[in-house]
Structure formats: C-alpha cells, structure tokens
Image (cartoon, rainbow, N blue to C red):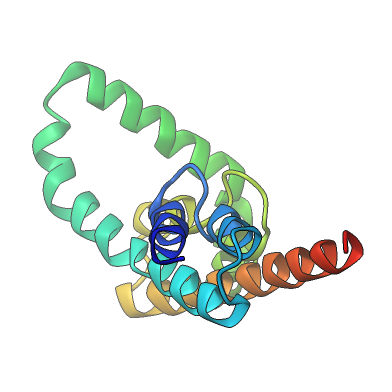
Length: 152
C-alpha cells in the first residue's frame, strides 16, 4: 500500500498525469480513497512552486541552448494559444477554469506557464492553480469512485 501511495503521488507530480492519473491509480490499487485524494492533491499543488522556480531561475540559463529555446517557444505559443484568450479575458477565473478541466494539457503545468507568460502575480496565480487543481481532483475522485462502485 505504501508503494502504491508513493507511485500515486509521483504520478500527481508528473506532467504526464498529474492528479488526473494519480488519484485513479491509487484508488484502483486499494489505497484509502480519502488518503489518496489528500496526497495526490497535495503533490499536484507542489508543482506550481517547482514550475515557478524553474521558469524564473533555471529557464534563463537553458534558453541559451538552441534546442531548448525552440522547445520553450513552442510550448509558450501553445500555452498562449490554448488558454490565452480565456486568461486575458477572465484573469484569475480563466486560470481556475483552465486548470480544473480534467483533460490532458490543461493542468497545473500549463496553468503555471500561462500565468508566467501573462505575468500574473504569483500569489494570485498560485491560488488560481490550487483552486483549479482542487476542482479537477474532486471531479476525477468522484468519477473514479462511481466507476469503482459500478464495477462491483
């Protein structure tokens, strides 16, 4: 059980899954549904400060490399294109709505990048991302609970 909870937390930190994968993984492995929610939500929230540190300090050193710069420009353009109009129009609420949609590419990684690109205040961006993560996690948690009940 401990290893499954750790794996669920790692999925929640991962850009390839976030809590959208961590929560169902942990629940289907038999981890307590409340514990898995809290751990995966918390791990997913930790992504925001890690992304801000990366974007503010590490990014400026890596941008000197041609491959990284091309990749960063591509990701930045995708983030602006995918969420830009909503975020510019709705600001805080735009980030919340964008992050809360439990689909690939709409989580805290993209929300953090968008907040950085649109120069949102860090506290406001953190709050918006955290609220979005919470609602996304609740949606996934409830959907997983319902699917597990339907299968038994």
